Image (cartoon, rainbow, N blue to C red; front, side, top):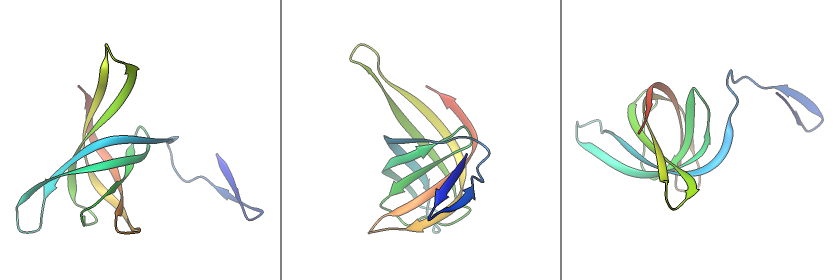
Length: 111
């Protein structure tokens, strides 16, 4: 999909289409000192190959993380569906007091 930015056409570089969303996620990983952490995050967009989310913790590029994403089903009977993933950080953006983190999936499964 091409994008028109300031009358200039910019080609989309992603190999998989992304969906915009605002899903809750739980991120797990290890700090440089080996201490494990668990942090809530918000998924901003998602594709078959990765996720971009906002987190309140400093993460390093290349870091391995586990992410559990909750998909609302819209039904009280069904509750939520969950996607459990592992992946590595491929991009970081320092935003207003939060980190934008792009993760490329290595493995995923639905719970």
